[in-house]
Image (cartoon, rainbow, N blue to C red; front, top):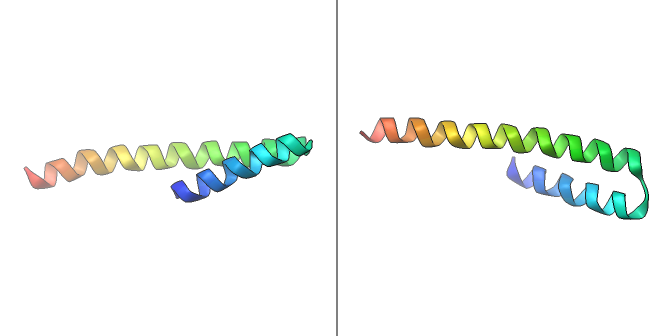
Amino acid sequence: MLRWTLILLVVAIIAGVLGFGGIAGAATNIAQVLFFIFLVLFVLSLLFGRRLEA
């Protein structure tokens, strides 16, 4: 999932540089959503992973 976030971020940067505002905005929004989902899943895995070991 982090890979998709980085890919969409690169697409957004390239589209922004080339002047495709709509595509850049959409790719940025999707990348942000995926990043926050990844972040929440990462924190949950840290919390539950430690509880299972203890």
